[in-house]
Length: 113
Image 1 (cartoon, rainbow, N blue to C red):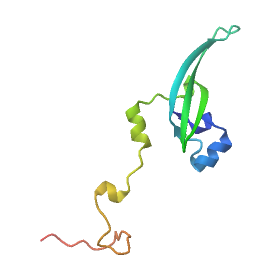
Image 2 (image 1 turned 30 degrees about the vertical axis):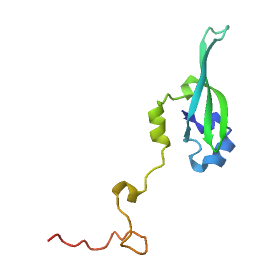
Image 3 (image 1 turned 90 degrees about the vertical axis):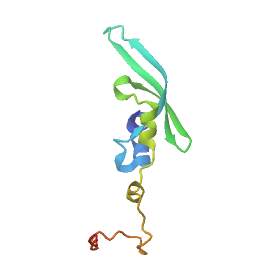
C-alpha cells in the first residue's frame, strides 16, 4: 500500500481523488524487492517494485523506496477496500414507516408501557 501521489503524478492523483489526493492509499502487489549499494557513499537503498491497482482496469508498475510503502495483509486490504455501510444498514433499520425517506431525529419517542 502506498500513497497515490507516490505512484502517479500529482495532477492525475488530484483528478482521480480530488481533495484526498495527498492522503489516498492505493493497494498493490509486490513484484520484487531490490537492494543497491551506492559505490561512492557505500550506502544501500532498498526499493520495492509493485503493481498498483487504481480500479477500472487501470494498473501502474512503480519502483518506490521502501520507506514509502506500507505492508498490508490480504485480510486488511479486503477490510479497507470494502464499501462502507450506510447508517441504516449498520443499525438494521429502514425508512419504510417514513414516506419522505428522511430521518426525523426530533420526533417524540413514545414511553414504554
